[in-house]
Amino acid sequence: MTADTVGTAQGAEQKTSWLPMVSLFLAQVLMSFNVAALPISLGGMVEDFGVPPTIASSTIVVYGLAVAALVMTGAKLGQLIGWVLIFRVVVALFAGSSLMMIFSPTVAWAIAGQAVAGAAAAIIVPALVALIAENYRGRQQATAVGALGSARAISGVSAFLIGGTLGTLVGWRPVFFIVLGIAVAVFALSFTLRGDRGDASIRIDLVAAVLIGAAVVMLTLGFNNLNTWGATTASEGAPFSVFGLSPAPVLIVIGIMLGQAFFLWTRRRMRLGKVPLIDLSVIDSPRERAAVYAMFIVVALEACVNFSIPLYIQIVQGRTPFDTSLAMMPFNLTVFVTATLVVRFYKKYPPRVIGVFGFVLTTAALCWLAFVVNNNWETLPTILGLFVFGVGQGALVTLVFNVLVTAAPTKLAGDVGSLRGTTQNLASAVGTAVAGALLVSLLGLSVGRAVVEHPEIPPSLVAQVNMDNVNFISNDELRSVLEQTDATEAQVDAAVAVNEEVRLRTLKLGLLLLAGISALAIIPASRLPRYKPEEIPDPSPPKVTNP
Image (tube, rainbow, N blue to C red; front, side):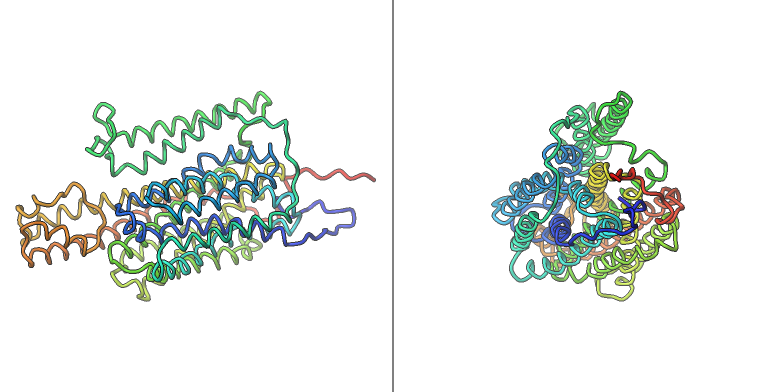
């Protein structure tokens, strides 16, 4: 997985065509474009399906949930069937999911489409790393691994720009025609890939697969429904209660317990010499575990920002998807450039230094945004904050993946890929869910206090509006609700002004809380390796050649 320090007898490396890498690069673009297009499509889905934004955002959560729950099993399926064959099958499945999005009559179809896409991506994610390991060696392999990070970043830029333009001029559905086109291109180019026929002797640890899958489902459902079901006591929207407690925190606790059971079971199988679902030796050292923790936090922060800001711009401000793409462009473009160029610093600075500096940047940027953000997203201070956050984000995403990759032998490429997929997609799902629950909770508290303190909004008007169902709504929607009451025009204007003020205050407070989480992430970042990439030996065993 690292630069080939063994080499051939003459010390020369055999170069391989980059054409197979085009297919793998586009496969990463396929998944990342699909994910990045979902926040842009939130406004269109809310309007098209007539559902709250928190329901529409379930498409994002379900995708991440499916990938995180199934990626470890997907890695073993790839080893069993053969990476190239199963890669083609799931790319075709991904194409089918885009058709479900394009022709979905209800939000349930859209959610199901993303569940199918997530199941396909659960195999594509480890396949990318495994196929790179099978098709490239030495410096080409290191370059190919780095390309995955830049592909993910450029997808975000293109999705926000193209998706925002299409969403404004045509609608949200045509965005997924692009997803379909990329899937077709990936399938066609997949015939240039080289791979084995699979290993029929591979046995999938079904107990571990059920444990990790159930753990991920429980954790994601618990976090995603903290606001709807209640953070402690069960609300009216909860499907059931556990002795008066909300099922959301109960599911989170159960998910943590199942996750611990998975690790105990897997380590037991490894002690007995049996093949585990994932080889835990890839996270044996504290440095590798620190990389996993850092990866989870940085991806969760990115998910929070990618959910919160488009939500605010499209739903709250009522602006177009194209406006959203322009507002997010400084962030996404900076992530792409930084993810591509950060490898140049690996020769001078160890991962620990880059990791700590990256989280310092994201913390400073979030604090800055919390103080300068306002209803005009095109201001220089806001652009500067998104730029700095993008620099830290892009550096960290590439860095932590490379730490794991360089520490693992080639034979464990699929395990590293499944670990990456589980961590990133669980973090994305949890980050999106927590962002929604956090912002809605803060909004509810702020609105309740502001309404009570406002002199022009009498208690009789408050009694006519369901304050227990506070959500992010546009000014037009709020006026429509108030028109059904006996509120005067002055009272309606006052209520809209209160809504505008508390929504912005909620976003600012949410950004400050994210800055606190980013600051805490400096702790695992300080435990990343001190070595430089060229100082670590190749973990893969040397090849034995016939004299």
